[in-house]
Amino acid sequence: MVEFTAITPLWRTLSKLRKPGIVIIVTLILFAFVTEHLQAVNWNWNWDWTWALSSQESASASDSPGSFFRLQKSDLRELQRCLSPNSENQCPSYFAWIENDLAPWKETGISQQNLQDARSKADFRVVIVNGTLYMERYNKCFETRDDFTLWGLLMLLKEYPGMVPDVDLMFNCGDWPLVFRAEHQPEKNGSWPPPPLFLYCTSRRDHYDIVFPDWSYWGWPEVNILPWSLEKGKIFSGAEKLDWSHRQPIAFWKGNYDMGPARADLVKCTANNTHNYNLVTYHQDWFAEREHNFNNSDLSKQCQHRYKIYVQGGGWSVSFKYILACGSTVLQIEPMFQEFFARSLIPFVHFWPVDRDNICNSTKFAVDWGNAHPKEAAAIGECAKSFLDKELSMDFVYQYMLHLLREYGKLLKFKPVPPPEAQRMTLESSLPGHELTLPRTVPRPRKVCTLANNISADMMLSKQREGYKRIKLQAT
Image 1: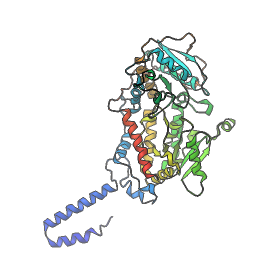
Image 2: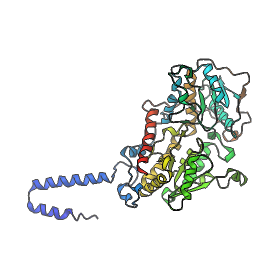
Image 3: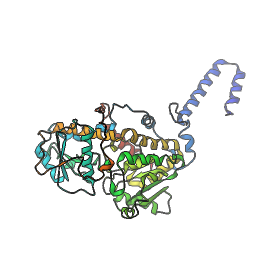
Image 4: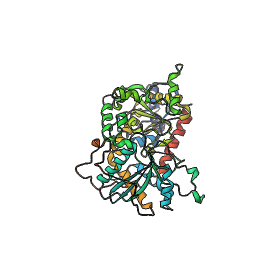
């Protein structure tokens, strides 16, 4: 029982005065004082989680700068919303980017000449006519990216028969956006509109590439990764074996050291023995892994740390969704490029932002904060995992593809016709990995999610920018 040692003598003194007016006034002052301090420690009555003094009480566990950083009320509301059931009829928020990606052609449409302008940047061409897919190859993509991307399109036609429009599009399967905004401006008639090019990623503001789900959703055999629905289930099961609070209270990253300056800077943090940045890194040698049957690269066995880091390589990296799936608090080093779903994720809700220009200190700041505020840190990890479970299912991946192709098809100013050199593709084609993603025996319901009118790409972009700005000011 709590003893209010400072309040009790005062109350006795006031009682002796026997002046009700004074007692009432002082009581109101005390009530206001207590209420203000309850707010200061963030006593939240509405949380489903079972903690009351969430920030200030746990902050006393550490005197590091990170321990005193506090989430804003808007962050806490978003966390609560993230862990609440979503409307089954409404599309996830990242669908709002479809309109943004296609905006350059809204007024002009897409002509055959526009399409040909994109050919020099494309690896293959896809033409869909009357539910049949044709492919014209220009370059062989790295590994089997093109094969699995085509398989995904064939699966879309099978999953939603008669609902995919006739389209003609150019596709690149690299890790870098190629259509630069600086080279295509409306005021320069000769450069507008930009060439319509489909790709797996884009930048926030510098490119016009049209973002499409990557090949790994249907499998990535070169690194022993199953189709997304199966691999996600494996990682979820692995994550359940160790609760967040019992995981190692440090940050973990495993990947190829030799890919890009950001990774090199991250590795330097662990090479500096004079500082404890609460971080471990491991080099991923894929050649050695193949020789040893991928014994040390099982993603479901990499959920043993409270914090996992996502850092891009020389270009965009496909690993983000696998890192998020562990339910650890993901520390995302500010990326140059983003895939289709990542553009809707909110800092301090789905991930913790890390300052690209100050990786070591910013990472330590994040770990210190999380260890001092374990309930909030664990909630961020759970929120990301919940997002993958509810909003990045294969159902929504296919519906994103469907919505995107529908809107793209409306912009074409010509009737798609298979080129003479194109190859007709079918599910019976000998595409690798098809035995893992066989079409359903029962047709998918024709119900498709509805795009939300109250969510904009600019709003999501603003939240991400603000998140990195906030952490840059703190982790110095």
